[in-house]
Image (cartoon, each protein chain N blue to C red):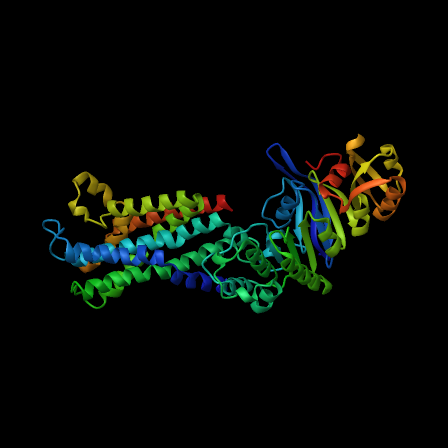
Length: 241
Length: 302
């Protein structure tokens, strides 16, 4: 188990496409939104850079949770790798666990790079303890997406899985106000957005910028999504074995 | 439990209207080398995947090393080479072999397994860049690196060149010489002949013969003598020594195409040249296994 875990972690270094999608893309969008374009919604100029920093760090981490875990499962299932593992001592849940651990590690670069850009390029200033708190909150916030990734990874393969992942990734990121804040949305859309998983993933860290704890409702809702996606993942995983 | 490496009891499997296995009993003792022979569609792969717990039998039971198959796999007692199973593409050969070695309680050194499979020169290569034959060798390295007591190989030499085949069988033989068990599926009679001490013949989802290599070989008829004949009484072919079956195509002045299945090709040839004046294009082949199965199983091979 440990030897396989090590292999899965090392593999994270080998994926240039993943690096672009999950690190450079959020970083680029962050710099574009804060340093290049003039897209600050009226009335939100205060703390816009810090807020966008959290949004883009969440956006990158969310993609990592989806693709490093579930995307890899879908790809490798298509190639028959889990079938090979099935005749080794490694149990199927060991494979998923290794993917989750690798995912937990490899979402960090995206978060750290965007936060670093916020501090170094945009001059975002926060109490020292808030920085690690942001990392932790975002990291926990994207948990439901790891579960959703597993569900898709065990439900679909190849192009279909890719398309589903991309749709979920962009769709939920936009709906959750990671690209443009929910304050810029019409009231009806905003009401839905604030209970969508990507918004809830970012919400604790956004509130931490103001030094306030997450609301009980948002934690409950986030836990609800996590449970729902985990149940979905378990169902698809069992079906696929 | 007893010293059986593999035990199947009354195993059946149905795919929709197709019967893949129609009640198979099979016991493989520890230290045996068993070849599972049969034409395509005989149920070889289905049988192996049920024996490994990868598929559930319709009815019946499978036991490996005295336990449920999945438990035996998890305990690291079995090394398996499946047909066309996948590999990770973006890792190096040595990394893959090392990672799999680490899953077993008492693995070989990865270098040792790579040498046995003939991939030591590819250790630093990305798996994604390998050819089909090289991949098959890597699969074999993964299969033996855990140093398991039981090897299960499904058509292990498919895609391998001569050197690759030789290396693979050499390693299998080294292991069985040390009391390990090996079960392999093949449709090459020669592989069974050279490397197994027992043959289990499967056709139409049933075991149609099971015994020492010599016994089963005699049953499926050793050789086929082919030639073209010009003139002479073709009916006399039946009485040539050793001949079991005669097939004739054509005839008359254009000559006849003759195929004789025989259990003594030397005697058959001597008789052939003695009896006919104009014999041309003589070839002696190992009997086409598929045809032998058809004879033996009355067409149930399909």
